[in-house]
Length: 114
Length: 231
Image 1 (spheres, rainbow over the protein chains, first blue to last red):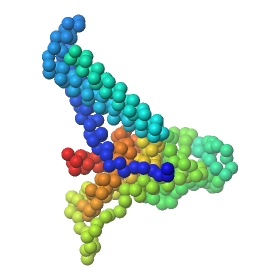
Image 2: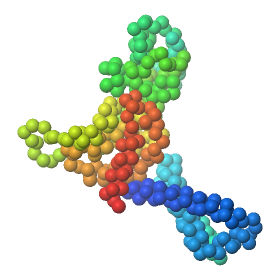
Image 3: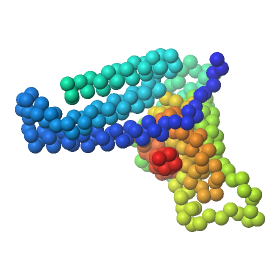
Image 4: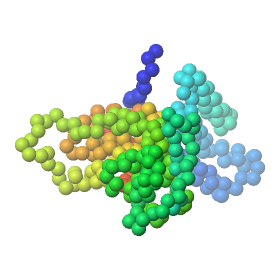
């Protein structure tokens, strides 16, 4: 294969925008959690369970975890682009990262709802 | 005044080394470049680029006590001794303080740094309103000294793929020009995870620019233009 510098992928804006939006979502969620801690001051498992019995808290928590995974994907991908130059190795690690993040997201569903 | 200067002649030296100089300055020596020229009288093997000696040509960019700047507009009085001088970081060294700027200018050329306007040229000039002209303030003054791009870790990592702050500032200079007609093509050309989005706004470029320009602000304006046309 010829060795040419390949750029001009015509994407990147969405990732950049998503990283900012998910950051805002996570920041708001953290404020919400702090408010919940101050308001309900949960001390034991039953208190926590009571808070998470609320369907809205569950939905918002899941939104947080999706944002976290998406945000992490963009960040880790950026790091891999800087440090891993072998295309095959990079792709393999990227796929592994996607699978792990997907696993974490599913796990979050289990923790929140089951 | 004491200096510690990076020396490397690939024809003679196995590896780079720092050479100490202690020179007597004259009262007229105000800027770092004056001192360097005085060193050259003693040791003419020291190589550096310089031309206009007043911060317009952008030739004598170098790393001065750990910070990139132009020797000709850096006052001697504010420098801590021994003054440590190194070539601009991240670019291949040709000799001593002279670096190979090929990569830097390749990125500059990639943004098409000229006005693109397919209308037939008017009898006189293409007019701009004072507001349209004001948009170019703070972006047209760049002298391409490479102090910003060589202070940028994203440019160190990917000089072949990331345009770098200097190139992106110039890209915005033409995006912002009311007489330019290639806005869409210019944005297409930049929309790439490397070319534009390697910039993570750490603002080393703003910190180092000898002309006190703000490439990060220009880069954010490019991103804003992309958001505007996309959503």
